[in-house]
Length: 294
Image (cartoon, rainbow, N blue to C red; front, top):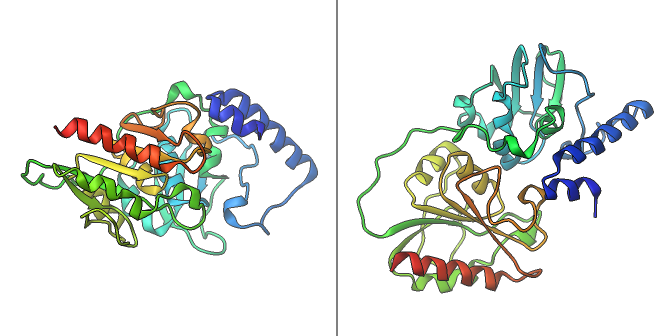
């Protein structure tokens, strides 16, 4: 087990930052460079203080990672004189209302044409700020979109996202495995899968390439059920009820043995009891939904 991952899964952030300090010192001493690596594997922060500086924040990971960690730009402990966020273009409109950001610029290949004093990758912020798990989740929600008018209707409106993409197939559920949920006739299903995919549920597609539009539609739902992907982080950041379906070896941010998440107070975790066992997870969800609707 990687000792950093082990510490983060335990919620022992302080021990994780000590490990990060050692790695950062070794990199500085050796003069290691990383610009030849893919962006999501690059380290950026030199360890320089952020307080009082013009801080340039690079978003080199996934959309969900940006949505999760953008909350830290508003923390009083950052105390930067100016914060520029170099963010994935798909998120530009969504993040316009996030506190703590002075400038939003679209991420692109090559180097940014902007002046700054210190730069940092957004997922390095927890280390730089010495974040403690007790400080989570912070003010919620921290992302806002206009709230549509709630449609009338008796049936519960539940959105579903079952595929996390090709890069980590163990996070995804086969669409055909959702068939057992179709027996819950008091639920009206909606697909949050983008790009749209066929589903065993009678689910109306409401996902959109425009993430602000998708967020607005998500606010019309009573519940969101999703695998570990950007949809989960968006629902959590909006403060919406969300059930997250996790593989047995879940990502470090979901910690160990918990059914809740300190990152998102409206989130509930459903974990595989053994590797690859989605059937137990899906049956548990079906049973709980059946209990709630009758």
